[in-house]
Image (cartoon, rainbow, N blue to C red; front, side):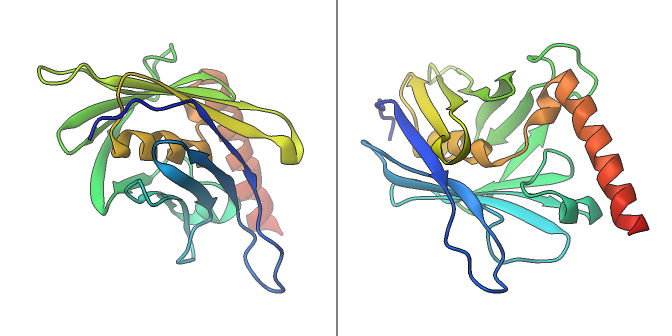
Length: 204
């Protein structure tokens, strides 16, 4: 069902520490139209060389974004490299042009249940998810902006157009994904960070 949504914010969330437990992070908030939404990483089940972010809520399909490989042990959130995405248990096809110059050219392109999406960076702390228009639907644009510092950080989501539950699940999901490679500068920094972390881990 297509729904016009009211802008809302997801606040920073961290559970209480438990002895020997894996430390999680995330965002949590309430959409007036879709109810409670929670973004958590790393999400269970916890498996070696795998890191997952999950979005859940009573009004949304569960969405999971997963990165596999040796370097996944060195990051707190999944990255766009060697990644898979599923919404409501169904696979989301993804592709991107790593060497494109513009933010639009570097955007992550996705396809889910016949709908085409584009995730584009608007800066380090903001991004835009579009469900592209087709012959049957005018599409929708959901923007997310992170503000604040420390425990006061928030991600505000706004939509232009009428959203589907999957649209909102995907838009919230990427608040818990390392999107740095969607910009050229971020891609360079991410590459250097991965190389340094891998060297430090293998020489420890």
